[in-house]
Image (cartoon, rainbow, N blue to C red; front, top):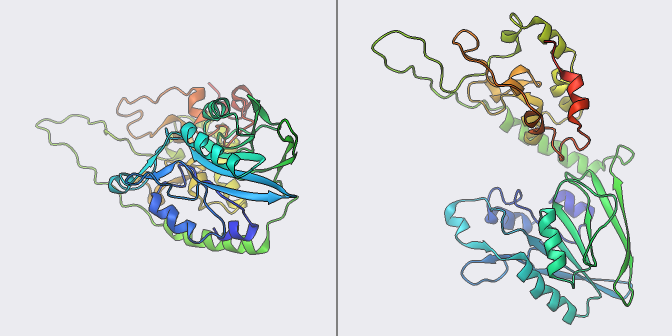
Length: 351
């Protein structure tokens, strides 16, 4: 919120991940913001009144622009069951029709929906509510360099994680606003603002204490048995790459030369070694209670092949690896240029 205030935001529409800790948590953050949270279809269950500001009207050069926020009602809110019962997500299309009509009454010549929903839901919104001129789309992580027209409505998608900034230049026209859209990648040529960088460093310092607090290992109790026999653990533990090396020396040497063996180093270089979102894909066994600190550095053998305890001594085989395993981390959000056949050559092991 401090960074958004510093950047001069006009409005913000939260998505389902923002509600991971519940509605009350976001209401607390909203009180610290210098701008409204727009979300028209999150309602109090008791009164059906919007929890947040439903819309905002801004005037540019004598032209009124109306914005309202939406969250797909198929997405779920976080928080306790008791808290969830206090709120409900109304149908986005019905909500959009209501507030589009209201903004038209207030002489808004341009109407914008800030919509956190899948692309299919955004398309349905454009087809169902013709009064919307632009949809600023979130949740759908792939970005589009050009606008995505549907039924006269232009959908703009800037991707995820603040990697791009989208700019829409428009001018009024009797048949609807004419617009030009461009997407600008926020690459290293845009330096970090000193004050925001200071905020980020403080956040990382606070987060480090949380990440480095090792979880308590779960007790592993051997089952009672009347006769001696080998017991395969129900939840195998992670053993580390050194346990794989004796039987698979060629594969281990190849792994050491691969980008997977340096995955944690890339986080350290970008000062993101305490970022929860990054650790899950740049480490092995992240969150496992059996590991000191909750993970092992780098994308080791077991990150793809699974925990190795019981292999091979207890006759336990490890699963085959398919493209689906790679896509757990190399998805559109994390690795938008991922091509399975090309990337596979960087890490494929000798037979």
